[in-house]
Image 1 (cartoon, rainbow, N blue to C red):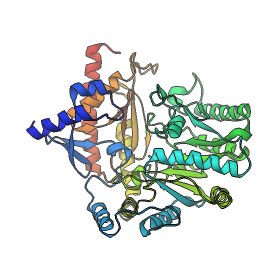
Image 2 (tube, rainbow, N blue to C red; image 1 turned 90 degrees about the vertical axis):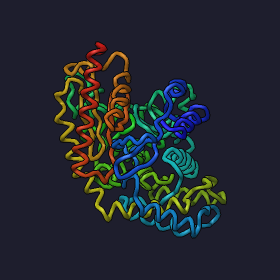
Image 3 (cartoon, rainbow, N blue to C red; image 1 turned 180 degrees about the vertical axis):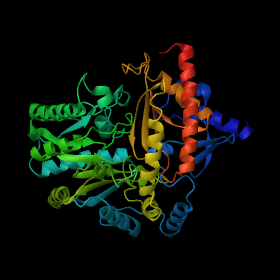
Image 4 (cartoon, one colour; image 1 turned 30 degrees about the horizontal axis):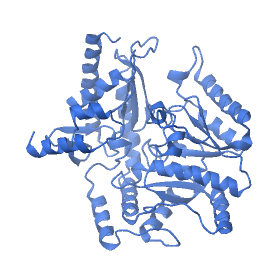
Length: 460
């Protein structure tokens, strides 16, 4: 390693607190410094190549070196590098992107509010829903329904909606009124002898029971990822979203689709809600909106939600919420160009085609001694490793095998996400069939090395 690399590694471990990282362990091993990217690949400061099997953080749709996005950012920086959208101000990039988002989303979605991250967007959504219900004279209607293992961000409000223990532990969360329902993952939470249809019926009945227990007049919204991603890549059981949507309509509860990972073609459909056939009142988008070249997110919502909020701003004189970077001109210019690329190159269709190939290849691994379940949709896949295939028994120390496999992947030039003992894949949407084959070869090597280590350690 060269002197510069040594300097970077030392500076990192002596100055930076990393997200989702054991800080003390990091001090000992140091970072993998990613230096550049090209297509679906990234390269570290020692020149090693990796297939970025998670598209960064589920987010780089167009690859890591798209010149049109660089040009869009540069042109906007030269013209108007920054301006806000407070107090009646506007600029063309944010206007055009709002217009585009309304055009490509389901017909009930007519309005846009920009933030810089999915967490901020979900935090904003909570405040919007509270503001709306106060405006409508429903001050008790403030609670949220979410799901165990759901992921909606890490701010105080969005982190409360998230249903993962490590996002709550020692942060004093949840800090807002939320009830977390059973995770809709049939493989792990279906009862012995229960059919998938019966599992769906049980979860919908549970949701209705909670609504009645809490009082429908206190439940503001139900939020969920169409396909749960960061909690372990879990597609919903058949009929689940139709049952939840029916409950929301029956009890006048807003339905919020968190599309931060699902959206803009990742599943081979425009949005997760479209893929699974339901109509949300509010959608949350980010990540692939700009392919994460710049931070940008948005709350997308119906005219009914807008009207209630707008009427109240007339009463109060303002909507007292917003961020310095809301609708940032450079970020929105990049977002607009990114969506053009997704459309022009049919990356949504490519995600469907390449996703089918990837899912088939992974499903063919079902007989591998480590694999309990292969699941996913489009270009999102999860492979859950278990100690015993027949009984679905997990490993004694959850996450230990996943952590080993994560490291083994790096040795074979593949970056995956270890979610407990599930390995998640979500490659850039530009991936080719030849690259899917190469990703799969590297994944099999990773899996085989992990299986050998599990056997040697006696972990199963």
